[in-house]
Length: 430
Image (cartoon, rainbow, N blue to C red; front, side):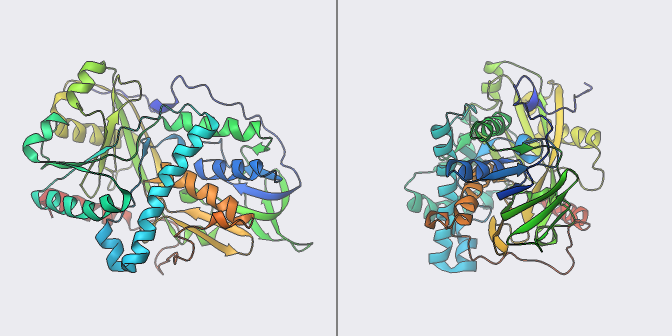
């Protein structure tokens, strides 16, 4: 079988997009938001709801980067498990960070309810599957403290019972995590964009910010763009993995990592359920990670991962990802891949989300590390509240060091070696 995928993201098919006509930015604003993904849109909406004068600047078109390309999995967990948080930060601080992850999911769900955005949200939970027997045991142990903290009851799935949840090959049991679920990421970003526009926020597409510098003529900052210079008293930087070279603060702290997705042909709800009987979001324990799910309409399977080592051409990554999908899900061996796409994620060097104030009156958010559907909405909202001086803008990440490394300046030149090392460890099961 030969795949001939369309390299337009499947998420973008048949979704009505909000009109964002070209326009000049206003010369002056109280608050400028840089970036038109979940973080920037949530921040702009929060400012507008508080009757603040805000403008949103987007280098391309809103929602066409990670926010419109991701797997649509909304969760409450951080990248580090409880024991890693406790070892590094101590019990009290580790618990506060874990609780912030839970609060992020609450922020997303509250926003969907408040705005009425129809993003196909299904609170179906998540199944995390282990790739070794040792990982299965460790997974159960790490879940116990968080289960007590969150007041939930994760369901262990022994290897012998896994087939009732997932028709897969090579896994060693798993854990059903009942919080969170799946949504349509592009519908979410379009709904947020419409809410921002309805609130009266000027949204300026194709307006990259070349420089952000103190305003020599007065209080605040000058934002130099190809469409003119904007003066703003306060700024929210929500550019994450795609921060321009001039934003050295973010580029020194963010590692851009490519993630890839494919969509199978429509095979019908019955066959999709035969492959994923539980209907949940699936994440496995490989270091290079696979994540997959039924599409929101239940007709096909969407499969993602980070397969690239050296060859990052879309065609090569799609072939590799399709091969991995068919190896893990043998029932899809005869199913063609119809769509393939990729996007850039922003990882902080410590694999934790961050919100920081690099300059007075400038708040920057990022480092979601592949778990940004909930956290980006949450921290975008918190950034706006913090910038407006409100006490409810506080988070457990506020005074967390945002680390740098002397060898990292923005371009992740070392990433192929890291991914190769991860691939080798995945192959030998360590």
